[in-house]
Image (cartoon, rainbow, N blue to C red; front, side, top):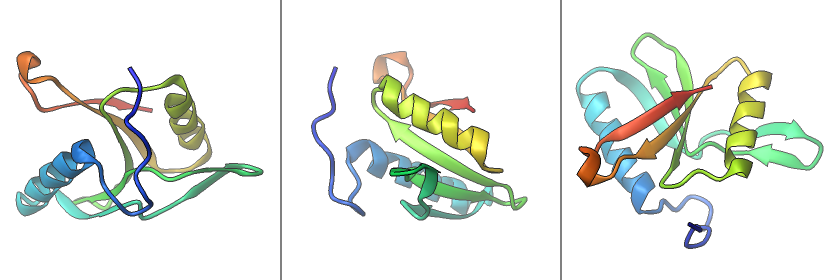
Length: 110
């Protein structure tokens, strides 16, 4: 499987838009205090940067970085794992579950 192409900075693809709606519902339920799309960029090494899809602050103040994918490549997982090892933020990989598998979101914490 291959991605359909990269969106312009600040533009969400369909999976990211669906996850944005999910985060909005969680915010209305009081679970999330704040979230923003592409809010922070992390420097991993010289000439290597990583911008998670969403920065999320939970109601208790915990800061998380959510990386949303329809399909995970090795490169994307490596960058997420490296960022998790360098910064005091919880990094979470989010993958959309197929409707035949019940839908919703699958998460992996790094």
